[in-house]
Length: 259
Image (cartoon, rainbow, N blue to C red):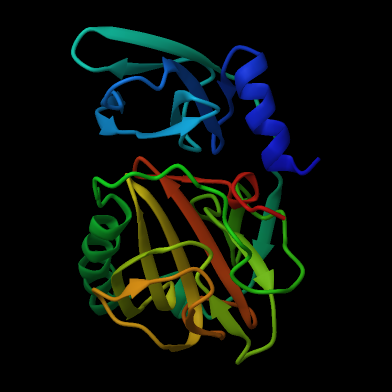
C-alpha cells in the first residue's frame, strides 16, 4: 500500500490528525446535498467526496503550534483535529552572496514578485475536485527536503517548502493533474517558474526551470509538458523544486504523489 492510500485509510478509521507541513483529512459526514463550505484560519478549505462522504482536506503550515486545529463548517458547526510533532532536518548550502545579502534593487524586485506569487498560491477556483492524487512531474531521485531548516552561507532562512527532484537540464516537466496556469515568470529566487491552479485552493509550483512551455491562462491536462528542468534562480545545481499548496499553505508533496 502506498503512502497516500495509507493516509486515506487512516483518515476514515481514526480521529483526524496532522503535523506542521502536513495534511488533516477531516470527515464531514455523508455526501448528501451540496458540499459544505469549510474554513481553516479564515482560509477556504478543499472539500471532496471520498467513499460516499464529504471530506475536508486541510493544509497545516510549517509554523503551526502543536495542539489542536479547528475547522469551521458553514456558519454554525466546528470540528477539531490534532496537530502532532514532526521532526525536520537542517540543510546548509553555499550560494552566490548576491542571493543572501540582497541589494536594494533586488529587495524591491523580490517584493514585487512576492505579490504575484502569493496571489497565485492563494487563488480559489470553485470547481468540483474529488481526485487530489498527483502524478510525478518529472522522473528522478526525490529528496526528503520539505521542511528543512535552511542555512545559506551559514545564515538562517525560512524552511524549504517543497520537494527537490534531481534531473538533468532539459528533462521535460509534466503536469501532474488537470488545472489552469495562473502565473509564469522569471523570479529572483525561484528562477523560471510555473504555477498551476487545480481548483479549490489546491495549487502546484514548479521552480528553477530551464524553459517554460505554457503561459498564464492555459488550461492544462495531466501529462502536458510545462517546461524543462533547469538551474535558474537561487540553486546549487539543476533540479526541479516542486511545491504543493492547500488553503494557501505549503504542504509536503510526498503526501499527495500517487507513487
